[in-house]
Length: 357
Image (tube, rainbow, N blue to C red; front, side, top):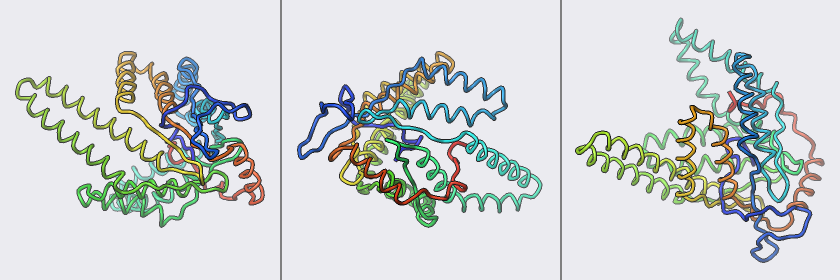
């Protein structure tokens, strides 16, 4: 289950990749289980060339080229992401993405004009958009998964409107109405919705996290926010400038902590039959990458951004593992036979890349 929003994440990695057809140097845990590293082989200089061309062409074409830019970006990151010596693939057609964006632009234009001329119509359209959001998210996830492949087998996503509405609307709203008390449970339901409705070929992923896994993360996050506010208040009495600096650093620390821990929970709770993902992002290491990336991006007026993306992708890949219960090659071959027997879905007409808009 690979999506652009989850491009290689977390877990401790071995230093080298072992070719899937060669001898086995991977760590083993007994019983035929192999710990397979994830590796990102991209380089900042390579990606910079793609990134700068994408920006220039997008500007010159008044945004039309952005669909091709997205495909080029994703293909670069997917093709440089390796698991057990095999890279992932991104299969999307830029024209499909462009059509999605044209539809979105037209709808947005109608919404703005209607809101200005007929406020009541604008309110109705806003309510309508909220109502169809779960459907749009499902179709976007279906598109993103189907356009992702590993060992020539595509990922899949299939969920009902009711499931999406509960996970993406009802539970988050209840979390907000309870002053955040139910938010860890809302996060759990959202993660379960995404993972359990995702498939590699015909095999569904599973997600076994508990509410407490998210609850503990949010309790510590809340503690960091409160501590930041207290320190900010105390330091501000002596120096307002120092108070702002301390407050900013505290919020960055809390935000990075939340990102690291939620990523670890997400991946460590995800499995594919007997196979499992594992992640162990570390707060000091991730914080160092984040701070250096932010500083260099600001100092270079944004030109370091592609290098920052590659650096972060390498760190996340280097802290991700796939714990395989047997041969991935045999598992993929069995999936290919199963998918061929079932045939391809006919829903491509209604699958579009909402997330790319």
